[in-house]
Length: 357
Ligand code: MRU
Image (tube, rainbow, N blue to C red; front, side):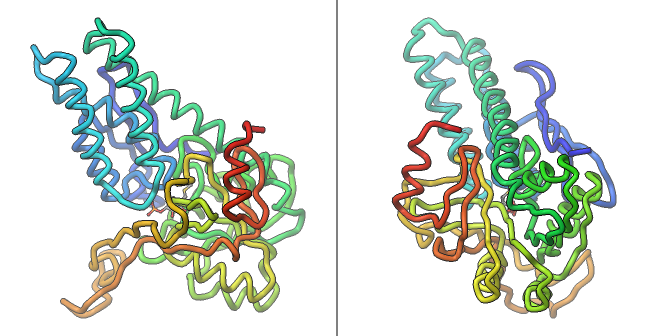
């Protein structure tokens, strides 16, 4: 069984239902977002997380944002409210570009819709926004599947794959990015093993990836983050596959903190290092990873562990949520369109220009 992280329930007056990922794996429960503020909190506190999932949710968040309209408001006010909701939701987390991509796509198309249909009322505009959010959601499901089909050949019979954080179904609307090639290889009855980095401080690898792999019946072993190098040294890792939060025009890739260290370890041990991500994760407006904003999270995430204090009160903490892996250390980026080998400024642009496979 592959989990479903999010679902819009009902019509334009409906709500967004999310698996509360803060509680997994101990408790599987869902939460319902009925206004933009609830969704903002869900994103900020990582009840829903993972770049594509955040993007899809934010698109639905613009439907929720329209609930701030008052009776008697006109279409100009509706567009103003849409813009305000865009700004508000965009401020929930800074690194995953899918958030901004989805918000800007919905707002841009909604503005075009109003421009073309001068007599469009607010009800029609809200229906249009919901339809566009549904389209983004459907496309994400399709992109995840295609990433799996394009990447399953890297999950070889008898191999051991290392992954970091969670880039599975919980991080998308579909079957994930980094885990999608594994799900496809599993469907083909290939035997392989996955090592899931625990992923301190919030344990997305141990809590979410291990849970998803177990649900799917894939052989999974959790390791602490500091064990990866030793496994590589012993020849226990054949490939690394992770997701991405933002990929710059030259292929530099932001992903969960710890990914950069893995790329250096993989290079040192001559192990292929793959990134799996949809085209919505590319940010062609920035030349390199140096321009990617890195989210800084609260120090208490590091000062404590599972509710227990693990560092002295008041001690300084540095807690960046992401790091950037240099394109030169990425063997290939797997997208829904195909595979970019040795990514660089030229072949990334060419790949995104070409029509989807
Ligand atoms: O802080 P998170 O849990 O949102 O970080 C998620 C990651 O880093 C994922 O690897 C990335 O978003 C890709 S998800 C398909």
